[in-house]
Image 1: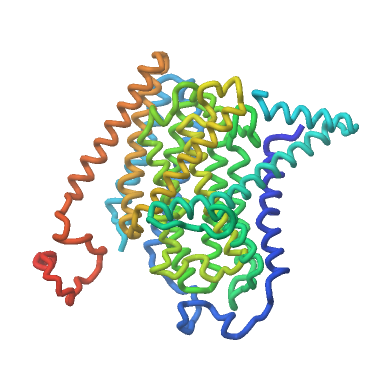
Image 2: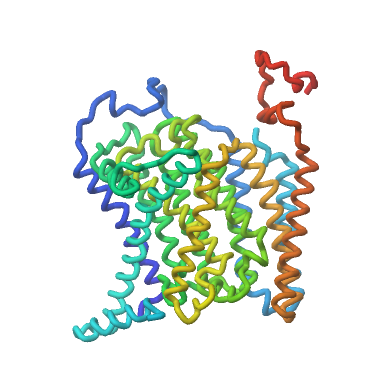
Length: 118
Length: 409
């Protein structure tokens, strides 16, 4: 028999196939008439100046960092959420303690001003 | 005929066995066929969804919507698809070609991949993963990655701005969405989605934890980046955001992925909080269960369409504040309280447990609302207008004589 993850593998191969087929059809069927002006980067008709990949504000970076921490912590909670019902009460309480630590981390980040859009 | 899915599959396996195919190979053929069917029906559904949404939004805005191509404009989407396929396929100069080509593919995979684990009925699902909820969280992120890649690789300043907003928005709302997804897991004690649905027999988690369902809906709405959260493609601010350089069917792939994702949110809401295929008679007749599931999913999808047609776009600082300072702390408190109540009342009858859980939800919701109304007192309409962006310079030439200028900041 096929394992569960074998099916997921088949599914993903097919899921790659679904968008690739219409895109290739589009490439084959569409016209190909490149032009200097047409190919230009579209920025509302104003001529593009310099590269687009420039320095950007650090606020975005802070949000990404905070997300990273909280997402990993949320993933840690999933196995506990499955198992806490079979353990004594203190196991559930320990999980709540962990949640409290997450909350304290959030309060710290909040207090530091990382969550304020500047 | 109660169980259409088992009937069809046993009929097909009879044919395969009759043709002399070994059971091992037949299992593979089955798996491929099932995956193909799920994926294709998802993408065909998009054709209908686009028509439905255009029609519904048009009605809400007192317009008629598509009505030329076919009866009630039903074939409008097919005409649009043909047009998109026949358009010229362009890659902007100095774009990162590999990422540029990969991005729309990833966006579709991130959505279609979710359907591998969603149970359509008691006997109809792609696969019953024992870590289904985690799989959903992981696969859903692929779409975000696609959007980020599209914005970065286009070498366009507007697209790059869209990509930055993706980081701030999609990534932030992933946290409350995941925490809300945790609630059905901890109420049912399993991560498998068919298991979660089976645990909701006569006890829908949406009734025990309505606040979690609401947070899930809001956070998911932000994750599909539709109005009022469509900051990454806000056309009045950054042209079309991350997909400004995409043309033809490449753009169409982003578009299709977005619509299918919106419906998938409805389906997930149904599975996690509204009992999935559960309903009167669904246990004996799985076909009926599939109908219940479709109805509930469409209800969730309709909520998303409704929000899109009704609400104006939210500013980025307000949106991030709402995520990090309202939804996330509320979910942390809610999960802690739900776990303790649920653990203490494991032995008690279901109506006491459900009532206690509902009470916890109501208390947390009331706390959030009272805290919010204390920190954001309502100003009378017309006195100030919206609060200014943090760091914004007061505008000297408003000429409106607003009282906000009198207060020295």
